[in-house]
Amino acid sequence: MCPMPMEHREHYEVDEHTERQFEEDRVAERENQIGRINGIIWLAFGILEALIGLRVILKLIGANPENAFANFIYTVSHLFLAPFFGLVGEPTSDGSVLEVTSLVAMIFYLLVGLGITRLIYLLMMPTQVRHERTIQRH
Image 1 (cartoon, rainbow, N blue to C red):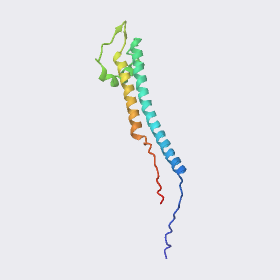
Image 2: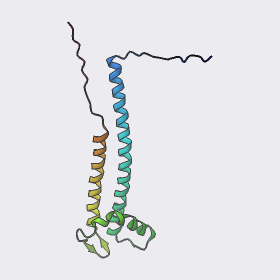
Image 3: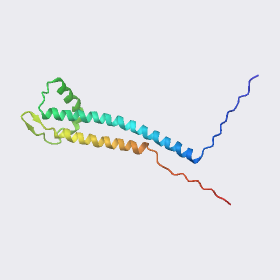
Image 4: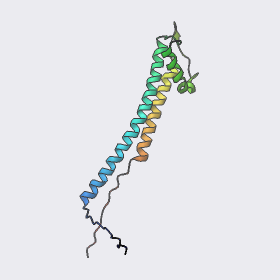
């Protein structure tokens, strides 16, 4: 003979304070998720900004492009700067180059990073909805 399955039920009474605390915990957890995602995005854009910034400095001081480090920076950053080349003239003096296009690219990528992180916040942050209960008494 098979034992009859037992049904397990639990009943919890939840007051308004507990409901509010649960909602606050849920919002806090979502804010933590948004913070982690935005942190990863800022890390990626920060690395890109540093890479382009190093390129600007190396070009400004007239670093030898045959040097392994300078060559690495120029090669990797070239991919991200390609859309900006030819945008404006590059002032030069005795081997030094002020890459204005790189500075423009840095501003552009900063704005893109700001836009992406704001969009993630707007899409993921739960809206604050106030619940009201109405009790009718006769």
